[in-house]
Image (tube, rainbow, N blue to C red; front, side, top):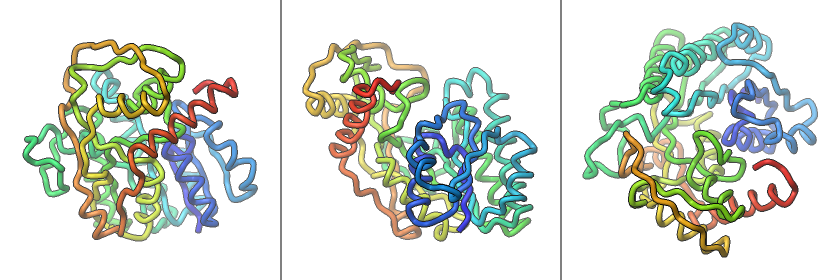
Length: 321
């Protein structure tokens, strides 16, 4: 099948591209390389031949629609986004321009090219706002009340997907992702704590912990997430599905696990909790199990060890992490 992946040079997107190519699909990648990197696609580009084409394009451009009508993807995986909550607060117009207007370009391209389905990377961490801890793990039936412009933009896209499904029979699956981690995650910018800790531990740099470190997240490994995307190409039509483990892990637990794996005892610097940061978060993956046949299988310790090994190889080779 012919697939198109927006944000395909990113951390999750490039891992998805590898999986799609391994399954014999032809893949078009659309990425403006503002946060993604061609290094993430180096192995794929070296081995995939004509089955992989990378297009350096902004999803907000009209060229994207033209490209899609030429290439006629059967499934569109839409991962490209402005993903920094802090940027969305500081510049909500930019956030909406990329995440809402950019997505409308992709949906128009999908409609005009008669794509069969759009699989959308939604945000499980922001979609439900700040529910009562008694609601954990969070179910999709909870009200969608995002409290950041980024979360609002992701919710708006889900509303547009529903509208396009009704108006144009464009099927969709929306995956509300928990805190995704794994190799290739950039430890700079709006990065996950696992990537940040891996680089700092291996460089012998101090670790920053905000608040008391007891705030929790639902950490789900990138390969498991990619498997959910692949399943979403044929299952879960018209639904939002949480993609997480259903388990809470604290920042302190992550630090202790990774410090032991790295064999180092880093200096820990405590800083005040950042404004608006959730104290607890985790997603109920029951619907994904029923509708997609999906569940997370990578143990946290195995996942963090893989990240440390990836960062270690990058540092030894002289690459920027």
